[in-house]
Length: 203
Image (cartoon, rainbow, N blue to C red; front, top):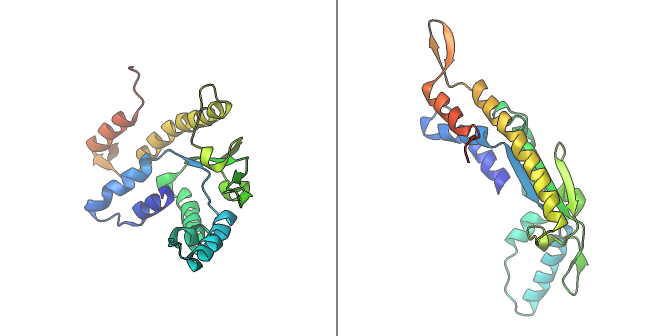
């Protein structure tokens, strides 16, 4: 969903003032954290889809649309990943901090035990990739004094701190400038936006 939103924002017309905020949105995204995201699809989805098809034969109703999207080597996932990689190379999203976490324990569903999203599918190039010692469904659940939470916060914090200067730099390089006596200057709107984006020194 995050990838698709960024891609759609980039594809809107930069000439139409109604969509200028979309480019500002892109420039304001400094970091993205993925938790067990199947960038390349999931073998688990392939198997589960087969189980759902079998269930329909005996009278169970199910929706296969999502599983078709999440299957290994899905055309849609391949398209989203290609467009996301292309977007990362553009100045509007330059320096994006990406963190990917993956499960290190198999999921047990009784008749099936496997990784829902394995390491190869959950990791990306040019990203911080780390495994947490949990199953897929526990990737976003943390207990007090949980070592996994400490690991998550460490790299979440790194991404956050690294993104602050990156976002400001993008706006400084963008086209919102005015000319005065032949000197290119930041427009009042951009100046106000940059001040708003800067981290506050007050509690």
